Amino acid sequence: MPIGRFFTFLFNFFARLHFGQHGEDVLVHKLFDRRLTKGFYMDIGAYHPFRQSNTAYFWLMGWNGVNVDASPRSIRIFKKIRKTDRNVWSAIVDAQTAAREKTISLYFNPNVDFDLSATCAPDEVARRKDWQTEKVEVPCDSLANIVNKYAPSNNADFHFMNIDIEGFDESALQGMGDWKSKPQVLCVEVLHAVTIRDILDTATNSILEGNGYQMVGKTAASIVYKLSSN
Image (cartoon, rainbow, N blue to C red):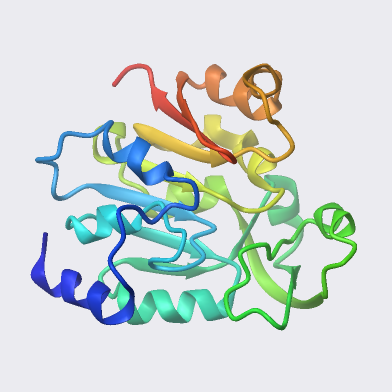
């Protein structure tokens, strides 16, 4: 573990066994050889460098990558802590919206410093009737454009992608066939699907299976997939 990154972590946060909200990073890191110290990740809906982060463990181990978030506050702290990563301020939307719009409304709770439930999906906001909400216009782009701009050119060098974008996860994956490369392991949030049968019936699962992925793990809110050819 790079010593500078270790002390950055200790200075900012208390030690813990995992960083992911439901231990997703524990599942994911077991799928990789521990000797891999120069891996590449993309964290879509990155939220925070450590809090409930599925890439913090890998960053501490020496990996680098791309962190994308719609919140300007989140990106500011990523630029402060993960200085050698690319940190991109952008909401992720479907390809049609990205081709038509340059910005989108981000709904967030103004009383929360780092709002884990901030979303660009109005239907998700409607479900949260007791949620105090404000909105701000933020840049937006498709996941295909982000991947094709920042990801490695081949699957072998693209190790992990985490997707947690509060209601846009499924639509963001629609253009996966246009990606120049695909991650060996992918963790995606699946809202409103509780049982394994529910998950297997989702469009998200159909898209990923159609692109060569197999489900290899599940937590309370996320599914972990592995690319079959790896």
